[in-house]
Amino acid sequence: MVLYDTPGVIKKEMHKLDAMMMKNVHSATGNADCVLMVVDVCKVPEKVNDLFEEDGEDLKEKPPTLLLLNKKDLIKPGEIAKRMEWYEKFGEADHILPISAKYGHGVEDVKNWIVSKLPYGPAYYPKVS
Image 1: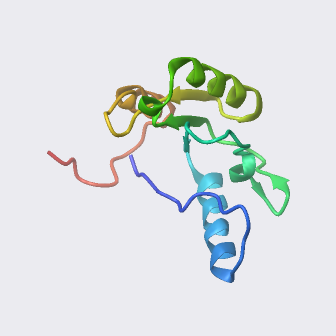
Image 2 (image 1 turned 30 degrees about the vertical axis):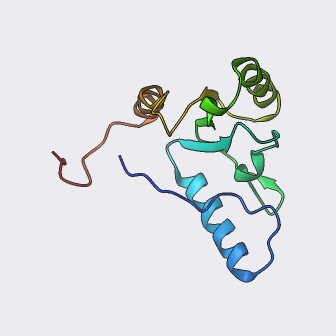
Image 3 (image 1 turned 180 degrees about the vertical axis):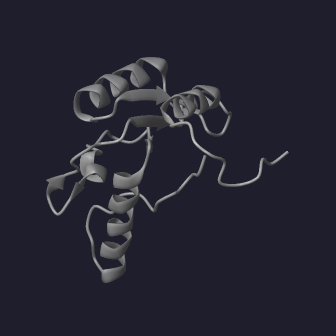
């Protein structure tokens, strides 16, 4: 498994570096076997489909996508349910998981989802013990 961490989505490109980073994000997304998007569940929900658009055009083939609602430890369960409902309607992800990276809640579910989406293939790196 090779993980590639992109800088995220820059809403308003101010400089050439911003545009270059967004090009990198779109390229990585288009070539991925699966995509994980992480949002702060404490913040007001916003559309996250920018990841799958470049120059206003949608990717031809969108990889399986997992939306992670992080910081579930900082918000009431009823609020998490409301956020999940919002992202199910507007998020364009195939699956949504509330997690707490700080406490490790949901991490095993994330691992299982990733492994279920990866194609079988040769090891690119030696196994780390």
